[in-house]
Figure 1 (cartoon, rainbow, N blue to C red):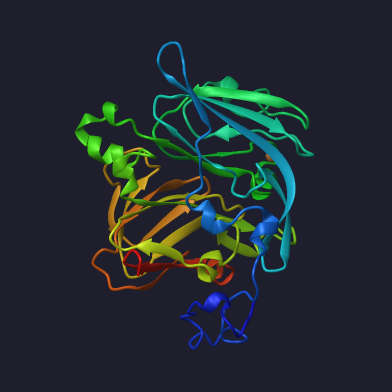
Figure 2 (tube, protein in one colour):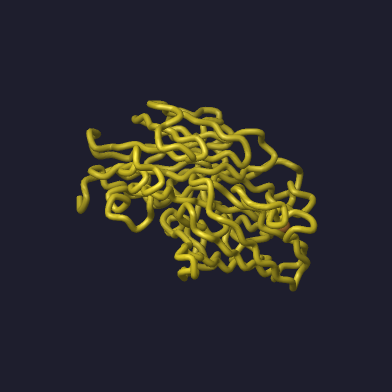
Length: 337
Ligand SMILES: [Cu+2]
């Protein structure tokens, strides 16, 4: 963890100040092999899983997702491997995205070595809840969850097998975002339209999927690595490119086990926050830190339009998390600059 050089040429703003660190520098040396993992934190920011759609006899859209539980070893920091249980071979699992009012069908296959389920934070029947007797399945089995996409918002799913702490911590969670249907919200139709993936209004935004997580690599009940989208310091090594003329929206969820809360702090700027994403007006305005307990989530909106170009940091405001991987940079410039 204590290094002399920043990988990737990024700037370490603490390097000259933090006398508490053995080498005056809090960074990880080396690079994670994203290709070996089969997923890349940069690609994950915008990699929404929209499944496939068909029109039902009553005119509604049926959206079908297929998700497999897979055991897989993943590299979470340079040279640090973790025996994960995954949805679709990635941690976090696929960022499922649907639209309010659609019928959803999730075909879940357990290809792993333990019982698993998909428990959705949404509105559905008890039979579809992903707990014992309702879609918690043994290895080799398949279950089909079916429910309506509601309420709109920034949600999540996770495995609900026992012990829950272990199954979640192993990597079995992901975003489940339901876009509002503008026709159902005429008073805020423009705002709703901006949230609908694929709409012209949405294309003006830079939308980023972020899941805050941590990993207990020695099974002592505490996390040794903290991250957004699994790989510690991924966005320091590869800062997130922001076109400063376009507003930014982050779908943020906390999946961190063992710690009661996590947080998000943005440097040099403030944002509006939509708790759980279920409203079309902000629940917090003009803040620069929000905190989330496990499974809490929300939408952050901000703009760098009036800023000078630069590398703007974001990180958990718990210093321990920051030092163990949970920090990154937005590389803010004009498009093409
Ligand atoms: Cu599980």
